[in-house]
Image 1 (cartoon, rainbow, N blue to C red):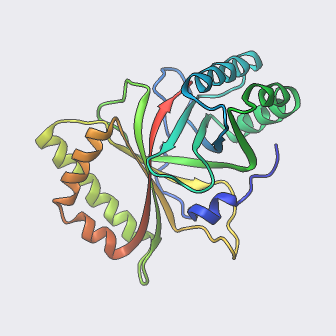
Image 2 (spheres, rainbow, N blue to C red; image 1 turned 180 degrees about the vertical axis):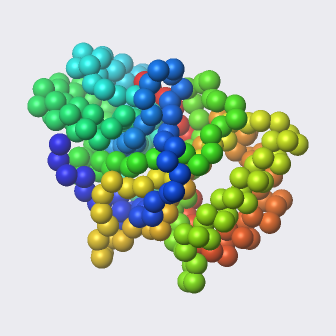
Image 3 (cartoon, one colour; image 1 turned 30 degrees about the vertical axis):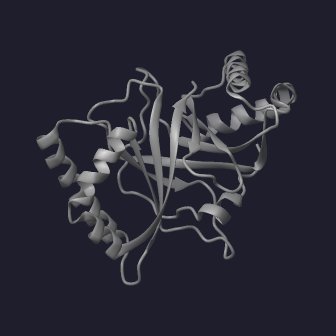
Amino acid sequence: MKKITLSMVVIFGLVACSSSNDETVSVARDGQPANEVVEYVWHSKGENYNEDNFALVVDKWNDLIDAQDYNMNGANILTPHVEVEGYDFIWVMLWPSMDARNAAWDDWMTNVDSEWQDAIKGIMSFNLNNVFAFKPTVMRNASVPNQTNSFENEFNFCNFNEGFGSSDLELFQEEFSNFLDKTEERDGPDGFWYVMMDPLFEGTAEAPLNDYLWLSLWTDMEEKITGYENYASSELPAKADKFSTCRRVSFSGKAIR
């Protein structure tokens, strides 16, 4: 597989720091290994894109994955809530290891890509310069696992303010965990969970990586709105703004595999 490039850094400014928690993202299906790699592939819509044609290419893609018997945990589609320069949606692939990811890509480019390009022609396109892999670390699991194929997804791209660092983030995470525990005691469990994402590629002087990437997930928009209302009523937003500055990018998500 080609070397992962840094085009995404130019637009998003991704992360460099690592989490101390060793727990990795787990998948809903019993018996599957944890996701050691989450990969994002930017896609643009073509002139023949519509929901019916997209559904057809998703089915085609799953058939091809099954036929090649790749070691893959699953896949999602992320659609931004606002227009983002550079892509229309993101195709997400979940892998149990980088070896599994590399082996699948090598085989795909040799044996499958030509057929796939014919299938998606005029419907959608992607550039292999916009393929990015990360190692996820779960910081809190959902108390009520999402049993649907849809979800809400929000990336927080963050830099530490002057004089602050990773110890301040860790302290905030402890306070945030206590806040979530108390909220659940009062309101009952919900489907919120969050993950720290470490890039499996390097930054450059022209496109430096941010200090950390915080990925939050909810079952649906209603749950997200309620969660933010609870959060806003606490002292946590002011504490978060004191030690770091973040930019949010929100998506609706749908599982396709």
